[in-house]
Image (cartoon, rainbow, N blue to C red; front, side, top):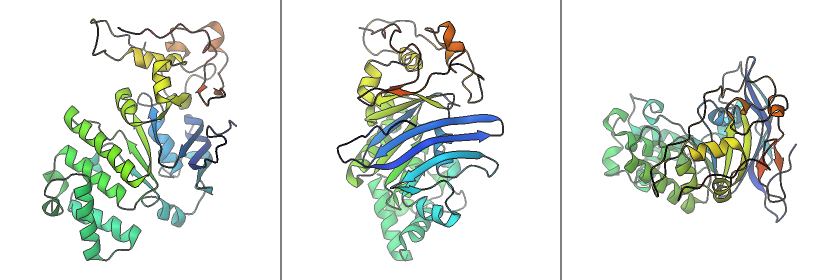
Length: 334
């Protein structure tokens, strides 16, 4: 097992995921994930759809069907969550760890007002009476910048815009005063102006509350704007991790490099984007070798036979690539 990235300096992780694996029958959706989060830190989880980003956290919080096979460990302040009782998990989910899902419209109950839904969370996790919970719900709506907060407490989800419903979900997540907020594609399906507003809101709330933030996204720009560290996932594994600025400036895994090369540039001359070639990214394939080898422009013969281990340097940068030291440099567009 890899040593934690935060060695020394007296820093203790808020949450540590150790060798977490998740399987749906014969399909291994997540494989041996090691990940740490410090208090007040913002980390990003990057990867294509199907790479295991969301499943990692649903598995860590025991939110997957009973037929799912989950192994490894998930420690919150040293307390083991995997295998914990339903009662123990109920006290943790929503209070110490909260999650914002992708589609706020479908996550909210359509037959209850948004105010009532937030009030129920406040009464459950903080024991407030109805009057105090309503006042706190109004304060949370003000915090997440919902206009006419008092009036919007009586609105139903279908009466609000997509951005407003996403703000309601953030308010609901903050209601329990969590130590850790997991935001799963919080800006999906929102226009760019609302996306920027939601990201600004998450940054502001994190600074004010000093909570840790996990931002799951396939949008590298979003990760670069919010997070200090990032984990890149492919086919259910972490293939690279490190500080965001260094990771994006000099990626060492061909998959990370391919993601960056597929981004359009706002400066310099027009150029053809470098897409990633077709190939399976699912957690069950391939049976041996590097999962990215079929799509990798730098693959060698050995890549189809040996699965690279996730190795760390002395600075905590981790990469799982047999050729990480001799792949060609990332093209920089002037």
